[in-house]
Amino acid sequence: MLRTCRALCSQAGPPSGDWQPLRFDGGAFHLKGTRELTRALLVLRLCAWPPLVTHGLALQAWSQRLLGSRFSGALLRASIYGQFVAGETPEEVRGCVQQLGTVSLRPLLAVPIEEEPDSAVKTGEAWYEGNLSAMLRCVDLSRSLLGTSGPTGNVLMQLKVTALTSTRLCKELTSCIQRPGASPELSPERLAEAMDSGRGLQVSCLSTEQNQHLQASLSRLQRVVQHARARHVRLLVDAEYTSLNPALSLLVAALALRWNSFREGGPWVWNTYQAYLKDTHERLRRDAEAAHRAGLAFGVKLVRGAYLDKEREVAQLHGTNDPTQPDYEATNQSYRRCLELMLTQVSQHGPGCHLMVASHNEESVHQATRRAGRLCRV
Image (cartoon, rainbow, N blue to C red; front, top):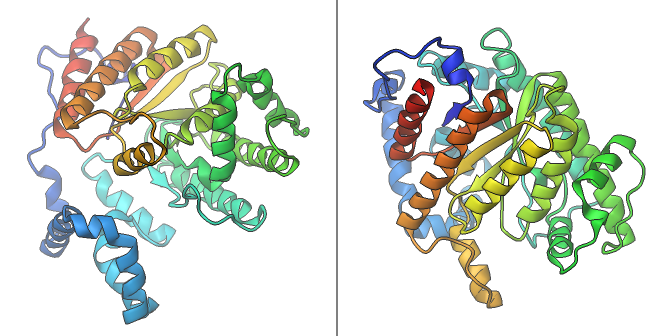
């Protein structure tokens, strides 16, 4: 992942005559031993095997029944879990981060908790409060990992909103937002006021129980951002399914009003934009303009997207238009357009606009570095 802002030029001084793009020549692999590289190749091959991708959760449950939780867990830790997870303890995570730091790679920690749409209802608020505690600890760990290196405020952490509020509430909020003549009750300003005041929020399209859960969710979001701001950790909110995203964007907009001002040193709350959705470029353009009009800093994590099959399945089931791009090349084109839009915004607005190029695609990263180099010379 590549992060860029005006500091891309200013911190390095005037750009030299020869822009040096990132290289993908395997230089980082010297950190890995033969066993780790073999595991990485095996996991890559397994993740490209459609039956495993489709039935992965069922196979995991089957292995737990057949092998037992302890042996099944050990197998996962030695394979897929070990490949993608930095560690199970702060000490293990710190060791992994220190190793990556030798090749100038920095961490983006995440609490791997989310609630799937239409999953069983969690018991009361306790589950979400427990997740909040885990996120607050993750904020502290994120800060401590880079507490003695790098500019203050450049520590990043991923935030999964559906770990702090139910997907059912998010779907109901999305439904309210998308109704013709949507009520101003659900404006970012009103939600931001409720976050600050802590007073009960009443939204007419929600039940009494849903209103109570909304207020508790706003309080949790406010607490995690407040703690992150105090610890100089910037939060990158994950995008999820299109049935949830309008609600998630509303919550991000409310948080942005409070925490993304230049006075606060924002942006402390970033949103994620999924290039595999047909409307992403227009939404990104509109949101960037709205942030600048409001005098707010704007933070973006740009991804391709991870829910393609599910989105198409839901659209087919409900007889609605498929929200995703028709094919891989259309998604690439969308990503390139969004990337160009945001790099131009960064060059024009400097510290008021931040971008993370969150992609495994080598060509996308090359495009970003080449374009950033040209913009630095302008």
